[in-house]
Image 1 (cartoon, rainbow over the protein chains, first blue to last red):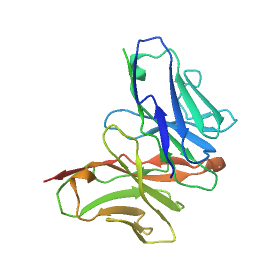
Image 2: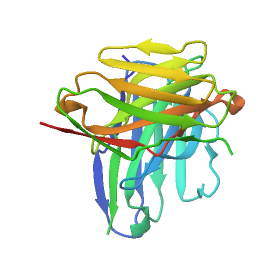
Image 3: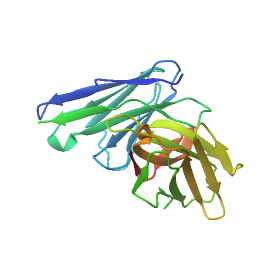
Image 4: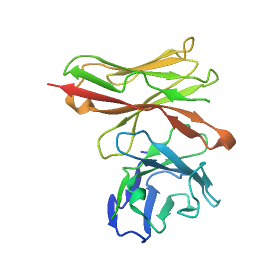
Length: 115
Length: 114
């Protein structure tokens, strides 16, 4: 149980374009989903927290207009990187949790490369 | 500020040996800790967790020890195997508004040599 998927697993795009990443909880209802970014050889950095049906809460320093998060259902959250630039190239990982569950279950990650 | 950190960035062990990965935390009110394993190019995988009312918890080949006096926890892996090679993170949930945000330590890379 507690399986989280992400799509796509990797994406290459041109600078200035937008990229959408999907995060799905496959076997449980995720009341809360989290989006992280991870640069090589570094720890995970939380970008935002989203609750189903509510606006996402962004961490300090994360541009909400650049990283659009939608959590329309209890099994799906999306992260859209708008007007991507090479510095946005990173490994983006989502996680999901439910009410009363302390543990987060992570997706496999999405490698974004912006040319 | 509150943080969860690691003592050793890299640990090299021989296959079959036991591995010990350490983690220090600063918030004495912390009551729950999680260890994650992250293989290259993959998302973190839950290994084991422990609550502050316990000093020790065992899983399959893994044991987590919690020392609240010195605010330290460790992950012990018995009979380390090549498949254990990964980066290991300790994490602590903080629940402002009940959203259970996690703070991750810097991570320790475990390299298992044959």
